[in-house]
Each structure stands twice: as C-alpha cells, then as structure tokens.
Length: 311
Image (cartoon, rainbow, N blue to C red; front, side, top):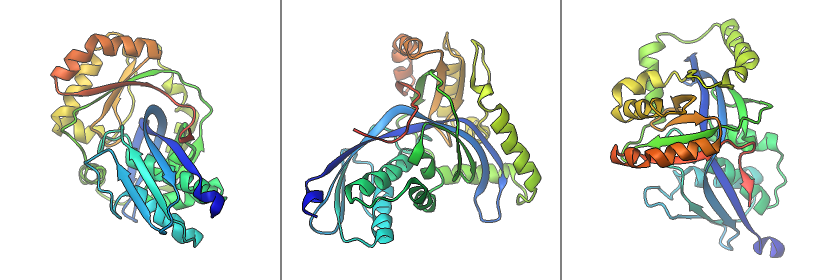
C-alpha cells in the first residue's frame, strides 16, 4: 500500500463515432442484435486516479451536469472492480469533461472503460484484457469496445468485438446542439416499436449480415470524393422527429469538401468526414459562425488508432 499510495494515474478517454450501425432485430433478452463499426476519435475526456486511505470511491468533476453518485458509470465501474477483486482500496477520481453528454458519442461508456483500465493499474490488480472486457459487458453494451478501442466490428449487443486492421486518416467535423440530448434507450425503443414487430430468431440471417460486414465493411469506408452514405438505422427515427439532427445533417451535406455525413450512435451528434484533418479544419473555420448562429457546438478531430491511453 505504501508504494501504491504515491501513484497517480492520468488517462485519456476518447469518444467514438459509428461508421456503420445496423439494427438486425430485437432479441428475446430485450436487447437489440447489432452489426456496427465503431471508431475512436480525438475528442476526449481526461481522468485522474489516486488511492485514498478511506476505502471509498470519491468522484469529482468540472462538469456540473453529471451525477457524481452511485448511478454514475465511473463509480459503478470502480465498485464492480473492487467487488470482483475483493480489495479494500479506495480511489479519488477527477473527471475533466469535454465529450458532450447524451450525444451518441459514448462518453460515459468511454469513462467506464477508462476507470476499469485505470484502477486495474492503480490498484495493481493485473487483470487481463479479456477479464476487463467481461466486466465491461456487464456495465453497458458500448463499454467493451473501449477496452481496446481504435476501429472495430461490434456484434451481438455490442460485446462481440473484432479488431479491424485499418489506419483511416479522415478529418471529422462534429455538430451538436448543446441544448439537445437524446436517451439511447428511448431511441432504441422507438426504433423497435416502428421496425421490430417480432423477436429475432433467424440465426442464419444474423451470420450473413455479420459476414457481409466483415467482408465489405472496411472497403465501404474508403470514400473517394463522393457522397457515399453511412448506414445508421437509428437515424431513421431521429432524423424525422428531431429538428436538431435534421438541420445538422443538412448543414453538413452542404459543406464543400464533405465526403460523407451521418448521425453518430443514437444521436443527436452528427458528423462529416473529409479527406484529411487539414481539409476539415479549413471547412470548420469557414463555417464556424454559421454553425454557431444555427445553435451548434462544433469540433474538428481525427480518427485514433488506439482507444484509452495513459498520459
């Protein structure tokens, strides 16, 4: 404990966007069967971990809109790790929040995975990635992705992961109205009510969709100066009922050098891809006032080859 008490861990906890989101159907366990491609981007929260002497999990943040109690995924992750490892250590955790909340960028899921990785190191638990992924899957469907991060195929409810060998170098512009947030659970419920009238039982169909995404998914992401579309089934729900999403997609579609555009996850954040970060920065500079006047926060970022990292 003497040596551990002096440790302080700092972690970069990045957001993600969906480069493919296909809802295959509703499962009998209440979740949805998904086929996705998820990609980390360089918009990130930062977490600091240090051991406290009280055996408690204490979370603080510079964000006033977050609960810091037991319902926070960071606290849930820390308590799960303590229980799993049967330890008495506590931790002081500070979250510096940059990823918007309720945005379809999975900031909370990223923070949960960062907590598992950070405390595994801080407490010297030596749990392997397979164990961390198993713990992550009990906390939320997006969380296992962040244990390895980068770009991955995600199947099942999101917990079946397959790493993709890719170094896509697109620049990204993100748009989100700061006054609009979306419940992921509510969006899936609306999609389910509209498109999933019975439970999914066709295993062969599921395997065919997975195989198709394995075989063609990465090739479909090489955009060559043309508006190729990114599939996001949840956009079918949000685009028609959420003016923020509809307008963001329209604004992005009109950008001069935009290769493609889409909503991320369950929204309402939307994004456009450009051939490189330089082009994306130029477009954001040219359109920043327009985005602001229309009520949007905007960011420019790059794809990341890795997810959560120690800094």
